[in-house]
Image (cartoon, rainbow, N blue to C red; front, side, top):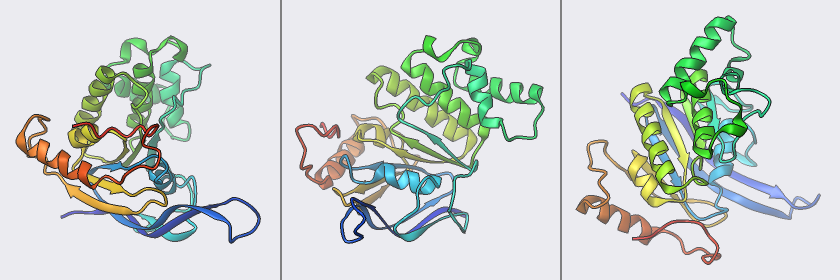
Length: 265
């Protein structure tokens, strides 16, 4: 039986540009969604359509202007270790080595120092970074830094992973390798992942569900459920047809000349 992990009910988010409440920039407009246990959801849409804002609302970093967000039936009002985040920017502490950066996620845990070391080392092993445990972040490549961020989530072990374009700044080969690593971790750990991306090919490779947003103010245009049994070979007829359906539904971007969304066929 499917278990609903996140419920988003009629959420609108506006940022006021002055003290007058009648002047606001609406980023999300009446969005309703729900995410089930062990789903891999990719949020896709033009720049500025509110995908990152939605992740921030689920994480508890911000509050909606209208509507509510629930996690396991409880209204979200603040961050929680049950909901882990991997940011687009490298969020490592430069004065700590890799192991200590991962252990930092366990700072409020009741585990002993030795137990924290063991948890962190197991997490680093899962992302193939155990040999770099005692290096400083400045010695790591961009891909390695994001592996540390993923290891930190593994150490925290939240039920919900929120990933905000975590690999978009990496070269294509590294991005694809990290996508595969995250996909394998998802299959093993059976968590729920909400993953923001501009890249339709990346979404098709990863997701069990793709949610397409309109231009700002962001609204849900359409959703696609993708069975785990469906071939993810990008050259297969089913993937080609699905990609065309998604790209045909993609809203025209007002800033198409600079928008990074990838809709290549």
